[in-house]
Each structure stands twice: as C-alpha cells, then as structure tokens.
Length: 61
Image (tube, rainbow, N blue to C red; front, side, top):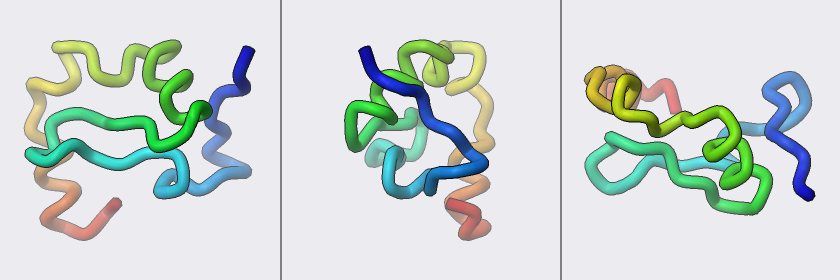
C-alpha cells in the first residue's frame, strides 16, 4: 500500500517527470508511480492532447 501524491503538500518534480518526448508522465518514486496508475494519468484521452509539450515549452514543469 502506497499513499498518493498530494499537490497541496508535496512537490510535483520530486515525484514525477515527463518521458523523452513529453507525452507521458513518469513516476520517479513509488508515490508518483502509484498516483499515475490510480488516476490513469497517462490514459489515451489525455496523452493525445498536446498540452504537456506546451507546458514544457512555457517552463511550467
């Protein structure tokens, strides 16, 4: 059993990163990996949207 990421209390960059082409979120540690699975953060409907690439270009991550 692993706790899920809490945006109010934890840093995104400690738990997550982007894959090489910025299309999927990758869990760095167990909390990140569990959160990705539980919330289906890389489901097809989300990763088809070009937002992650735009966020990277804007320096939002």
